[in-house]
Length: 382
Ligand SMILES: Cc1cc2nc3c(=O)[nH]c(=O)nc-3n(C[C@H](O)[C@H](O)[C@H](O)COP(=O)(O)OP(=O)(O)OC[C@H]3O[C@@H](n4cnc5c(N)ncnc54)[C@H](O)[C@@H]3O)c2cc1C
Image 1 (tube, helix red, strand yellow):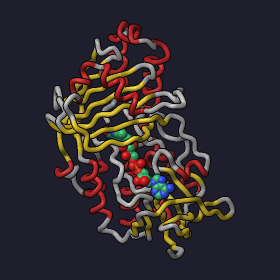
Image 2 (spheres, helix red, strand yellow; image 1 turned 180 degrees about the horizontal axis):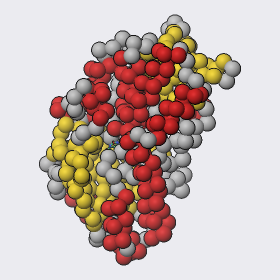
Image 3 (spheres, rainbow, N blue to C red; image 1 turned 90 degrees about the horizontal axis):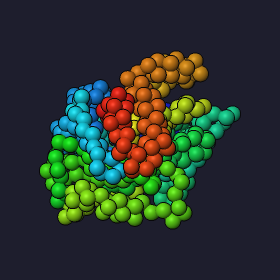
């Protein structure tokens, strides 16, 4: 592979990177998108999103494409760890279950209308710096290293971000998660999401129906205080069997997809801009900290940051500190940033109350009505 040059290099082709690439390439900047896997959308991520969002207009020029929508979800039930208590809420805005891979294809169709170069099987290894400024990346493809020189890097390489690790961008609350897509699920109410809180370790199981007999389930833990031999699959087996309702839901189900992953519950990182680089999507913590809902916020930050970088390069030929400050000031007031900040404080507070103050199943049940009021006042839809 020869060394390459471009205006904007985007690392990672999840929803954030794809939307960043669309914004950059639509502005006619020479854009390269690299993805370490052999396929875009290789790992299936979130599949439950709000039906309406301004980002769909920006990407598709219309609403969410009908082809990707599987089911409407009008409300949710949250069960206490003992499963003796639950609270039920209707969503103020309808949510939908989507097929992630079809969704990625629809976004990719938009990218394919541009002149963006897409390199699969291409892994970012390290940044190239000149006078402390990031001016490129060393990458590897087919076991051969090569350099991509660029005016700016957008790091959309997910919550294990190699660029973030290299540049010491700290994300504190990233927790283990395990996801299954099932057929033949015994879905109690196809319109309702279910969340089942767990203790020892603290966390939650979820079930998102995609129809009367299909859906996504999973488990996450909200602690790093775990034994060395911790295995999330073992935990899922134990907790889903102990819980009568979840056991009934999955008893006859067959999974056609499963993945071990990580979920962000910490909220956005303090400063998404470094010298010559910006962090978007999971890499920037752009995920709702209550329910780790990140598809829409990752798409939005990817698109908006790339649009800002592209405009700055087109008008001034560079991105100055002043421009970054002005963008950041305005961006803090955007709907997405307000949503992320609100979720950050509410998520921390709710988990502290549940698992540090109340702790045990009994005390959580005793205080369930109080929690219900708290959740109703804090929760936002995805
Ligand atoms: C199990 C699970 C369930 C979820 N449920 C929901 C939900 O229901 N609703 C919702 O809104 N959100 C949900 N989320 C969160 C949401 O899916 C994520 O926040 C969002 O998809 C992150 O997108 P991203 O593009 O930032 O990162 P990713 O999708 O992780 O994309 C990062 C990309 O970068 C690539 N990459 C990484 N390192 C390198 C490298 N060194 N070189 C090149 N490429 C690299 C990766 O291969 C990957 O393709 C869920 C997440 C998980 C894991």
